[in-house]
Length: 182
Image 1 (tube, rainbow, N blue to C red):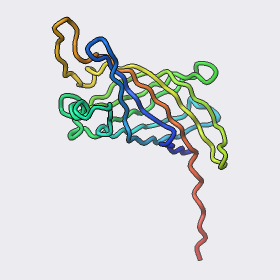
Image 2 (image 1 turned 45 degrees about the vertical axis):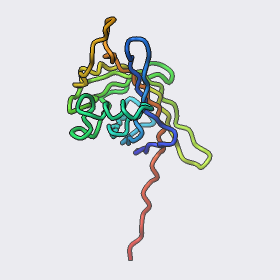
Image 3 (image 1 turned 45 degrees about the horizontal axis):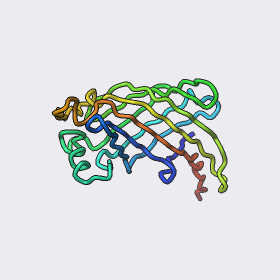
Image 4 (image 1 turned 90 degrees about the vertical axis):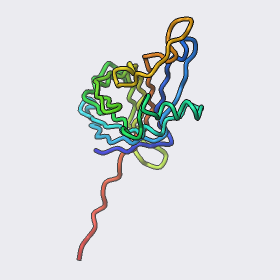
């Protein structure tokens, strides 16, 4: 059965070390999910997430412009970031290991996310919902995000490891209505 993203209750965040001493956090404001969920066996489910790379926001306009530039995401040439699941493995209770292919700047790498999937539950309006919380870490250089500068005291301006956090709420799509023809 097809499920749709509830954007009001979903978010994609990232975090990376800055100057070795602090963490910069950001998010992507525009994304869509195409999900087919097997309610009887979640391991048989699949999902594809498409993220508008230009929708990134860190709270600093100059930094955001730099991240959108060819030094990083190159959003003019690569407007989308895509994650497609390749496996959902039960780990006990609501815990799952989610594997999939992440594509950034035209480079695809397999990644692993630790997740928690809950549901389905019926909301007060009668719709069925699933919730997903997932997190993981990727090395940005594996996706061609190589820009950096050395610091005088040692280390680099931008860390290599990027932490990802996903919160998604999915709503079961309504069955199509049959229309009588005359």
